[in-house]
Length: 457
Image (cartoon, rainbow, N blue to C red; front, side, top):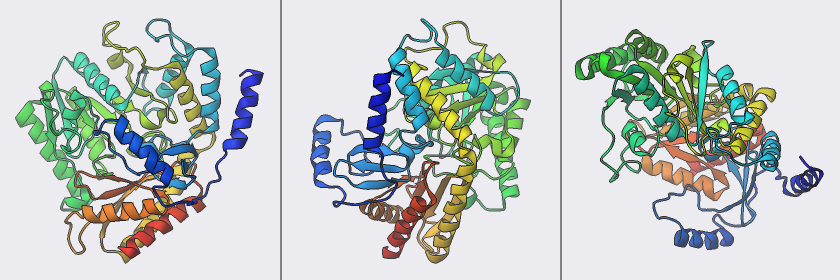
């Protein structure tokens, strides 16, 4: 970094440091946000949703500051992206240094070290000690598409098995892979073919203990594959180890290893979509690590680069090398600036022990949410692992989804300066994805606001 850049960065760091506390100076949304949102409506597609009606001016770690000066606690991390916190110092430093060096060449035109270094790190940190290779792209959906493409090329088969409640993206193929119709698929068809959806073991809504659910689910799924597709026709089984948009559904113990074993026995490529669950989010580097599952291919995005657009497919070297030269690639895939951010992100996770921190956050979340569940029967279940947890809201005494209550709770928390996100195929889940650098005090403050919301409800 040049002397001039260092001076500028130091000055900006001092001027823009945000105190990690919730602070409201106007109602939410405030007048400046309201004015900016009018411009948003006039300038941007009506097809774009919005989670909280504010416009952000600055962000650091776990605080978002809007244009009115309100400081909002971020329990969404940009949908699980800013795991290392917003504007993390190592990410910022590496990005500045890279921007000053060069911004683009296209890796398949003139390669650069950043892309190679990111792939080397991913080959090291992903599950398994087997020889691995990696591919960098721009988004989770693009990574999923490439994983499917690679699996089909490797196996010379067509069919892809996916699951209920799954979310894999918004492109044509990934919409076909995604389960939920509204808002992701409605009116956008026809979709890609040779996609087969299987039941997802959803412990809260299945009968039996974990062992029986696992056994029943594996029997049902494998029978459906054999009878309706033919295992010899299946290129890939694609699954989120913990489902994200579908409601943070955690499959029962033994299910993922059983599914992976079935795939191996039948020459099927087992693909783990760790787009939302990866990079220390669940209290392991990857959610697959919890049961020592080693996918043939693992798909990553979101938390990989501290907020810059980057995604990856990492997997068995023989599978990754099965594609002909120039069969993979893309103009911006593995952009050097995003690669620099990824190296800073992974360095932060490892040097600051954010895997351990995710477990500490998880303990606070689980304890607080379970206490709320005992007080408020509207909370049907608390579930998740590490700093990826959720509550499912129902009508008391039933398992009937209560989407209305979710909306009211979210609206109250937003009005008090706490950003929460929803999830679930049934629209009745509140999810918690705080940055892994959030302080205990800030997290407990946010949870106290959540408690107030339930009490008022």
